[in-house]
Image (cartoon, rainbow, N blue to C red; front, side):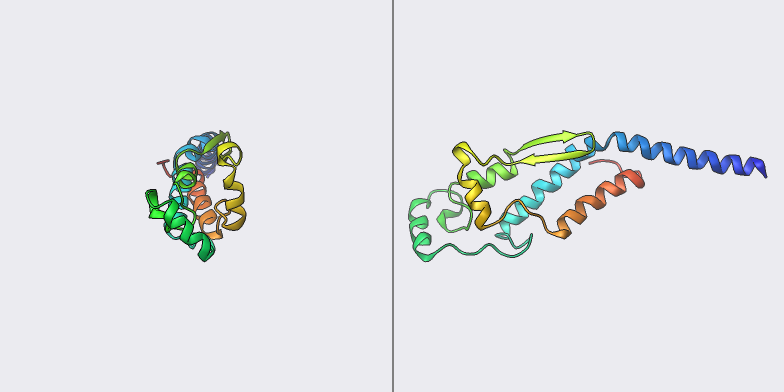
Amino acid sequence: MSAKISAVKKGIRDNLTSKIKRLDSVSHYLNTVTVRQYVQAQTNRWKSQGASEYKPWPNVSEEYAKRKRRMYAGFPGGGTVVMVATGTLVETVTKNFHKVVLKRGLIINVPATGPTEYFRYANEKRSFTKWSRQTISEMRKGLREFIFKARKPG
């Protein structure tokens, strides 16, 4: 009987040890899988004009829509897509963002000063930095599976 108890204790110890080791590699998971999830979520947000994350972004005024079609006709979206004029904003949030990967966390930053000062105003009118519960839940689910079910990153 004591041999069975020892085997169970060893199994439990090995299981907990493997989870602790995976906790030490969470930063790798965040830097690969979670960053890809972020980029995909932002891409979906822009394709759906915000609808994938809460509700669609409100339209611009008719006056601005006319001016935008003229001014940005040669840019991505042809001046007709909400939140896309030159393409700088969508490029920044999907490709040129700053990230800081911590041991157990991830910070993604979209600069809102300098040449991208407009971003702060745009985000106030049509959020591109808040996430729906579903998106957060999907990111957390993958991380939980990685830690507790030995899911391989990537």
